[in-house]
Amino acid sequence: MNKIVVVSPHVDDETLGGGGTLLKYSANHDKIYWINVTNARKEYGYTDELEQQGRKEIETVSRLYHCEKVYDLQLEPAGLHKYDISVLIDSFVKIFREIEPNTIMLPYPYDAHSDHRIVFDAAYTCTKTFRFPSINKVLCMEIISETDNAVSDKGFVPNFYVNIDDYLEKKLEILEVYKNEIGLPPFPRNPEAVKGLAAYRAAACNCKYAEAFRILKEIG
Image: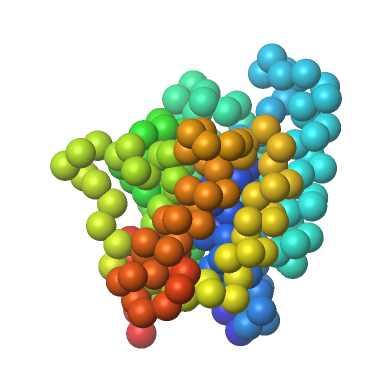
């Protein structure tokens, strides 16, 4: 049994980037932990309705993944540049020490959204083996509408694939929980695009649907 930590800068990133893989890990009786970094809150200018909706979405999605625990840091969306990075690092250190995870799933370091890049920088700092010896695998997720807009010379080149033939439909159902994040074409975060990307990535690994990752570390 492994302990898997997925780190999402925003709600829906965990599902867009690794939903099928999380479902597969869960079906294998691995323990899933979810760190969500930002949230819509009234103090950031969002309505009370949106704040309550966000909380319900996290509760629903965490239940669908059978998460052992959710760590909701509730920082400001699109505002992580306002915080000293030590705030994030300290949070990740505390959580990683508590869980002693085996696998970490992170956003790609060159995603278009600055929140993604900041989260990666802070979390990856906390994966050094001599400080966290339990961590033997670090994966970067491919998050549609962000990773595909990465800096051109730092484009996403996957080197690790997960067959999600049995989990794609459930992943799409989970995405439907996020009423304000998922839309219809040509909006990029739409079910057709998610399914199409999964079919495209599957061509590299001899299955019908797959999720692709950039593996940064694996200790056998």
